[in-house]
Length: 478
Image (cartoon, rainbow, N blue to C red; front, side, top):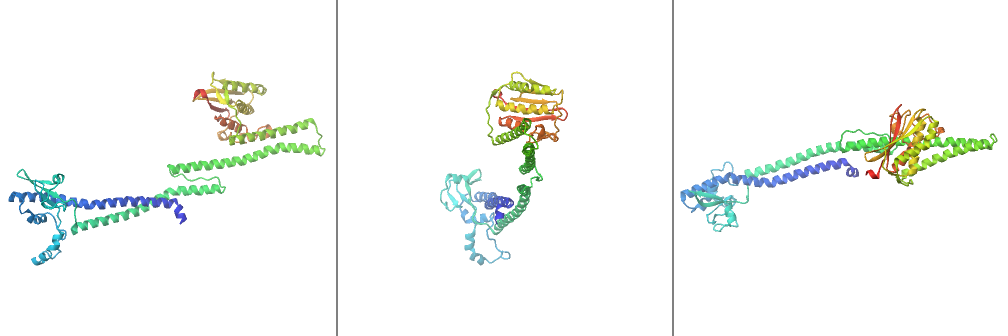
């Protein structure tokens, strides 16, 4: 029962069934209450013209309405079937038998029409509220149909407001109409039930697959993919789930790799430090300033790595300390180029600035931006060959200031390009931390730029160099 209550499949099926039943019931009620009125109006319309002609003929022959009451039943019988016709085989019963049944027949006679004089006096009543001899209200009298004889208004035909009973044929017609309605409702409900089950199954199948895949992820099987069978909201949900699943699997793999890289980067200097200290304790090596300097260098590497990891964790938590101020981008680029000019010359690499004049100021933390430029230029120098070139660029685009660091190095393959901002990712797997590269440089760049409201991305072609672009909003351009 609980599963029935919680199942979207059954909820949808019941919802379709309720909608179908409601629509069928409303239609049946409307038709049921309209059918009697429509049948009554049909009978009136069919007989109205005939009784009008009969009354015109009566007045033309008699010159007045005298005696019309006595012949009224005969006039009506010409146009209106009695509600209970004689049973088959009894059409020629004796007159005394008819007399015995006269009382019942009088009670069962139907009176669809009445008659009134031109002055509104009722001659033949059709409404108990206005018996013969009473005066009709003007609006009720005006509703009657005129009887014209020799271009003179001689009376009006009054029409019953509702029918009191139907004859067997009419009652049978109404009964069959009701039966057809009931059969239509039952058939419609069965069809709606079938369509509801089909649609509910069709709509819930991808949801069941998504639920199963989500449960697999919860159990640790991260690489899950569901089939996308449509382009509606459920199809978009399936596509989003597949993207999420792939991203979760990628992040998990990256986390595992990062853990391994952290262990490797910590183990290497710790091994060096432990080896020297152990050897000096055992007397294998004698303490010397050079050996202490080497140990201190490894300790600095550890401190640098731990500091980088702490900075990234602060950026992730939104706790990174920033002191934004208005700075001129070109001045920042010139300062960064000057700091690395000597280092670049030692590697036979030229470094220059190509920035638009009068670049608008941006609101950033100058110290953090110098840290960004330090990481980017150091990275560019690492991969730029002799006689290569590093360009620090700046321009305005789309209401923002765009800064860039370009090199003429070996470039990055398309497969590696989306991953270069991941932590501990190294485009060149042959490079290790013994060259001073921890794999956190670009991750720190991304964290520092995004924490200041900027965007960063890379553009590269293998063999043609790499460009790292940063974009910041400028108060003067917004």
